[in-house]
Image 1 (cartoon, rainbow, N blue to C red):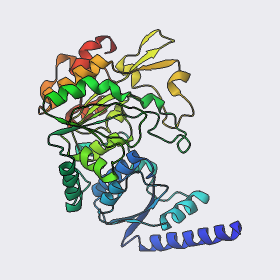
Image 2 (image 1 turned 90 degrees about the vertical axis):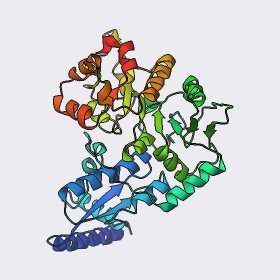
Image 3 (image 1 turned 180 degrees about the vertical axis):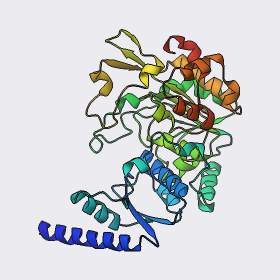
Image 4 (image 1 turned 45 degrees about the vertical axis):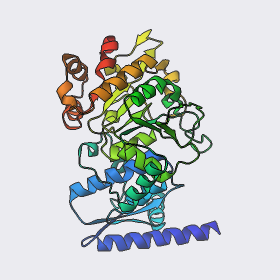
Length: 383
């Protein structure tokens, strides 16, 4: 039975491929697999692909197969509004046929095109489109819970963020205790901000009694998550993980804390005009902290089987509570400034320490991101 099914599947695959190549002089059709179970992939796949397609400036139809469950249905709904993007199991048949018989074909939208690093799309105009339904539902939630603008979103991940039975990748080093935000949250509330915590699942029981703090633990929806993160004044991310990509696709100025692994390529995926800080890395072999220029040279693979840092005698160290408070205060104070206006000799020294001058120039001048000045001042020995 399986042999017959495979014969039918691959026969259909070859028929579709033949048809597509026949149409190629008049119409370009390509196929991709959407790994929608991770919100980071769901966000960036189409952002990167559409950016690359627009650069080619040709008529191209993309047909995607959704590989697994969908992490956020509202985000998928918004992407489905894009022109010339369709969804069908046909894409899976074509993909498996080409993979089975091991021949290369440009009709496949490969991983590098969907998950490009270094990333150049974040310095361009926003691609994803919203609609009236998106805003009406979002405004209804704001009114229902008496959430006033401006509001700021906070996110962090912990052991509940990913079902490890489904995802075997080791990302525990991205975890951050949300309770460490308490001092900053209270400070921002005192400045008359409303604070919204965004997460799908958590083991942190952080509570705040202010009527300006909101956490929809049991009432969150896919729509509310995307609305809040895209329409906030800014977002504060406790670490770099999948949901941080929402800020990127909406080209939203955000604060990225505890970035790990810290690479220039990774920095290219954060949102334009944002501020960042890395985790510090202590080397047991060298008996000292790695410098920034040493951190970016680590060959960490996101699909590494095991704990890359522990296996290489490295210890990741979170930004301290006091650093976090000072960094958020600094970011809020300078929020309306172009980060190029607050460059200092210290910033110049930081950026000039990296070997890849071309990528560094892009990050600084086109993406317009910068490391927190407060963090640099407290960690001069890392430059």
